[in-house]
Length: 424
Ligand SMILES: Cc1cc2nc3c(=O)[nH]c(=O)nc-3n(C[C@H](O)[C@H](O)[C@H](O)COP(=O)(O)O)c2cc1C
Ligand code: SF4
Image (cartoon, rainbow, N blue to C red; front, side, top):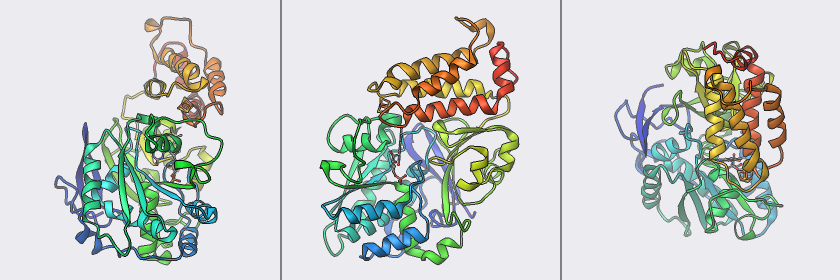
């Protein structure tokens, strides 16, 4: 790492972005405020201009580099692109930089610091598929990000044919970045998830096949194309080449955004961001899984490295607990937040999440503060089962996953809480 920049997303707090090995290599802030130089001239010193390539070549490059979606589900980008090619119809293209999770700052960092890398990735796809409009969905609560994209779009040459970038700020909070919620926004309706019977790759915006990917995913596509598959795959592990952006924040929005190669020990990431690696960590954000201090020492930043710990990176949010913080209390706060952010459309969100939030709150309270009987951990598990797989989107499933991982990782702490005491 040679430097960092303090980025102001225009929302409550600032983010420290560290210079990285690939996507963030052009970020040379040396600690001053501002995004280093996000301009096109600076960008082109590091990255070539996107050229029109046959779609099959893009699929091949994305496949050999094993680019997996960075919006949370790790879906192979090459497969998504192939579906778009095979559809053979007029297609839509969406860059999802909604970043609805407050603790996540990686997509905002990309758009503030290296917006042209994301736009290059989208342009590569648009040119290859003959798409004329790229929809860029940005977090409505971070106005500086919208401004940064506007500035970047205005700077870009129009190219061989006219390609337009349309910018859409979200209004839907935590669930507003879910793919169907994004399509609702683009269709002029409430920015909330809705039930759909077909994947957006088949019938998305205006009923057309829609390729929607996370902003970081497009940045990786541009990076693979820019440095070549060989150089990209020299980073990371053979199974998971390349790098990943992580948002590391102990206390909500802001924190540190860091880019590491896959396979990096979690301990190194925490130390790099100024945290002692001796405390529990919530990995994967608000829909993520808890790691005990012993598991923190075993974990590496890769899908394969996290399977034995039953954890996932999700969208790359890492929340380290600070000394004295209690995982039971922290989980109860997050579940309360998630229950409030639900879109009141499906049963598990209307009834299940509030019930789960109340149960977690009772568990977290000291005995004297409780209003009901002693909390029943089996009832909490039962509520998790009841909400899972029943919503139109994965919001209830993610919330249940977080609670279950608390119960499984911190059995002793949960038991103490059941008896009204806290070990933190
Ligand atoms: C509740 C919920 C919130 C989501 N929020 C975001 C988000 O803010 N940004 C994002 O890119 N994907 C988000 N997703 C995932 C998207 O639905 C979609 O899978 C993703 O944008 C696809 O891009 P990828 O293949 O590059 O990951 C969310 C999913 C759920 C269930
Ligand atoms: S599960 Fe919840 S967030 Fe998802 S679509 Fe249904 S009501 Fe909305």
